[in-house]
Length: 289
Image (cartoon, rainbow, N blue to C red; front, side, top):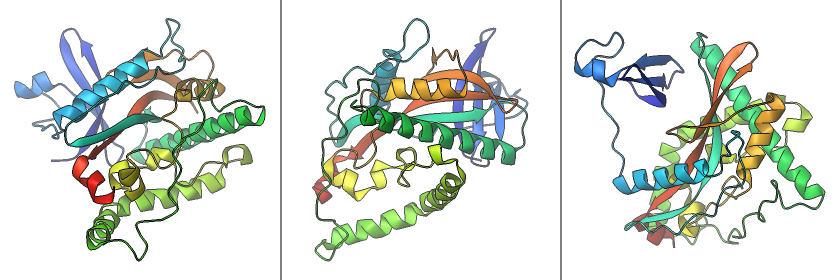
């Protein structure tokens, strides 16, 4: 059994097909119906990872909110405000939206990984530059967007000597589970260092890599501790960033969010804007609250 992520689903002549990407950046496509009939050429059996039904519901609401920002011409406007949502046993907050790039041609896994990471870093850099440029001319960030996060970071840190034993235990757990993320962070810093100056203003704590479930500050505050991709103006910023890479991009709604196919360095690339959920166990929030 190998872990993989469903990139998108399509239906061809009444048969559902899932395009998937493994952790090693290998692409494959299979039909759940054909697997059930025992005649799929790629997959013999599969399991769907468990996800809490409340989290599924919250993701659907955030995807619907993203869809409502999509115009008839396939352009992204400002997000509508996030409706109040209460989930028993969980703390939720507006999602941060990020771009996932998937090379859908017949590239090797290594080339796919490198190209996808470069595209995503480039878009992050453009988004950051766009936001700073708007602020420089007196705007409030991204295309009439609201002010930056009004929550201030606390002056104290739960990592200091005053933290209780439970907090120290959580820090150790977080460190163990976040080793992979730290490796990716190091790679991201190296990638950013190689980007042109106009793209080199990406925060090392990139929101695209930030996981609130593993962040003590996010858990304690009950809100994103860094980044601004959860603000209402993020979607027109992302739209503009992609337009700088390729003009006349038309976004379409999809199950994961919105998507568009572009050509980049002679490769066909699927770009998707997806919500990164803020959905934390209430017990964790009480532990650090």
